Length: 183
Image (cartoon, rainbow, N blue to C red):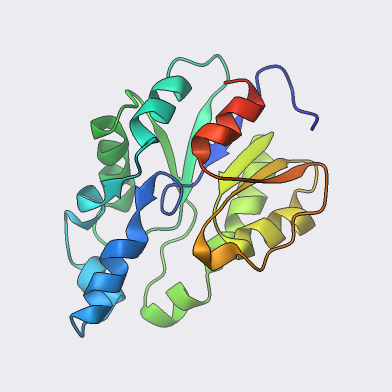
C-alpha cells in the first residue's frame, strides 16, 4: 500500500467510531421510523455509543501534522455541531467535521446520496486514505477517487464486498487501519 509518510485521512463516524446500528434497530423494533425520530431530536447524534477502540483511536489522530477529516452523512438538528461535540467527548480535541449530505426526507436518506459526495469531496480535499464501513462508499471511491487508500471496516452489512486492489483493504476496526497507516 502506497501512502505519503503523513497522509491526509478521512474517517467515517457511524459504523466506524460510533454504534449507530444498535439505536437504529431499536427505533425500528419500537415500531418507529428512524428518520422521523432523528430529524427533530437536537441531541440524537450525541447519544450514540462509541465502539471499544474509539477513544484510543481519536487520541492517536489528535495533533497530527496533516489533518484528519471526519466525513459523515447525517441529518436533523445541527448534525455538524452534534458530531463535533460527540468526537470531543470521545477523545478528539478539535475535530474537522464534514457533513457530506443532509437528506431532507427518508426517501433521500435511502438513496445514500452522501456516499458519492464523500468520494468527490475527498478527492477535492486531497485525502490520501479513507476509513469507512459502507459498501456504496467503497464503490464510489473505487470509481471517483481510485488513488485513495481505502480501508473498509469489517461490519455485517459489508460482507459481500470483495476487496481486490492493493490500495484497498478490509480491516477489523479503525485501530487496525491506523496501524497500517503508521499513525
